Length: 299
Length: 227
Image (cartoon, rainbow over all chains, first blue to last red; front, side, top):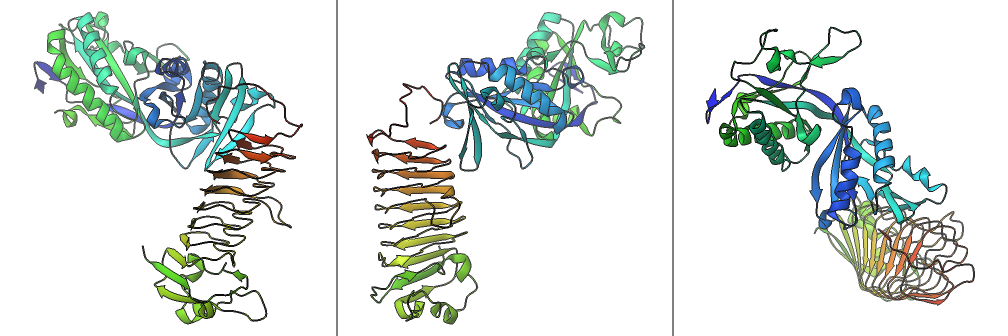
């Protein structure tokens, strides 16, 4: 298939079922809410090495947060609720509790709950107090700039999706990065999804396994331009670089929406920036439960 | 809004126990049984039919028209639906309530919402003493729910209260939140003397206190995320 001078492979992205949770971080200003959220999202690119995939989903105006202050929602994806628990505790304890003026509330609404304030509250050393308002249960932890307010629990869901992706191939590395950045910016407006890699973009796509013992994943040689002559390459002679956008979402529909937004954006801006081809990453369709066919996402 | 209406048509100076008149209790009751419910508290055994004109169909709402300070236990044990009192209510309104809404469009007597664990109570006028408190024999006062009073409230609001929220647009009387264990009392025009007597935990919010107990220390200014 071709659109706007760009070839779209007849392939699909293969994604996996994951567990997800989220928190709303608020602060006195959007800047400091975002600061706490960015810090909490650090080292949260791939569940394989980081324990969780973490990113900012969206920003909230004061009207939409529990305490009437600017806020940011952070989503966190992992293998299971049990695997998310220590990640949530450590990230909130080290990155949100410590951030000036912050407060932390449940960001996912679901019947199944996991502990949120249950760990960080002990920082109060016995001076923490519980407060129940309506059905919500909060902790107030005394800190040096006042109080850190944190909700007791947050929701967790087990039918989230991780690993939706779009690959951009092109003949201009700088232009390709430009196009990928615009696609990630467009995904920013899609609710319930994150792009956990640096700036939302991965340059080191991986394949499963390695020639070395103990390596779970290694470089996706079929998509490395410098290996075109050495391996069974997926790349044509004009491809200079490949970038990937990885998407995690609370629902399969959210991931599909984000992929569609990315593909639309790349088709719109790609030709002038050296994008020649759009593809997607899969493992033959046998590993992941969710398949997103590019042809179904086309405008 | 479907529901039953009980119009007080006969004056009595006897105190009445209206706790049977809640939506969940009346939902499946035939009219004849309804009229036979005993609401009197003396050996006269006054029945609903002796005092009220009943109209409407059973539904989510029960309305009591023509209130009186003799109507005790209005909405006591309310678990769902809405109960409206178009007038004053006596003592123990909304006692041990677990859910639903109780709207009193007049004044309420003592022990309003005592031992309540959920639901919403609104009062257009003022309320008597011991709102949201414990009664003798109770372990705790209010353990959940919200009480909103437009007028002022009497002494010892929230005695041994554990959870929930009480809001008055007026003044709260003496010893508000005595023996309190948790929850929130917000008096928009301030507290009478001695709020927080023997209080262990909980939040009292107000712009003024008539006389502060010596057991409280002034801990200066705060800049808090939530109150």
